[in-house]
Image (cartoon, rainbow, N blue to C red; front, side, top):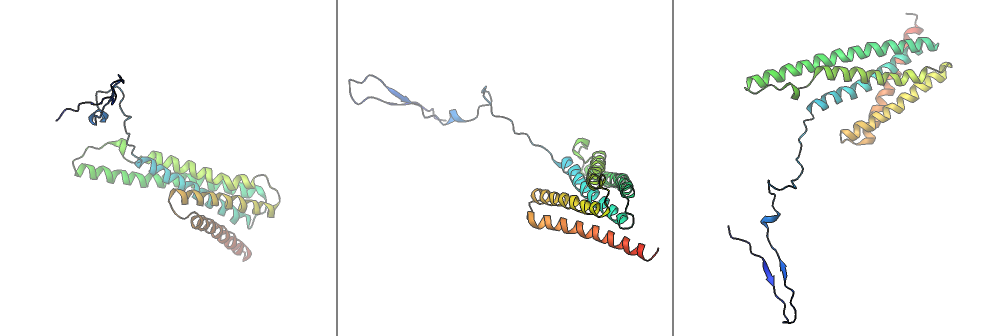
Length: 222
């Protein structure tokens, strides 16, 4: 490889005594592994596990919000006292959180077994740290369900008037559904307005059907 010599520009006038030197060395700008000033290392992060428990958390929170609210609305259709509605919501929270945790655990464990079997068939090393963790997924799902369930419970806990209580439950749940719709639309790169309206309308339908059917069953004396 040819050497890169500095090119000199000499003064045009003999009276000038200063010589300006310009160094044109392309190779000197290249990365040298022995330099003290090395570039920062690029870290590659595997988001497989994070995506797994994040999905479980989002679904768990949405299910907890909607199922508990619908259950409370259904019981509220035939029982006007606040104690019955709150106890129903708490029962729904506990049962739903346990159900979500067990279901997510079984589902993710099945995926774990499939991926391990595939790696063994391909003769690759099984690295548990890079595989989905069923315990994390179950815990995230249960906690998220409980958090979602607290929204309608807290909305109804301190309101004695029956009609006002039902209205508050619908209001706080609708607000939470709007938030879920916006977050889901942003994270999923989907149209935010359509995503939000879809989630909100689905929640209204679920609560309305539960309230209406429970009221109808009670009215016929079953």
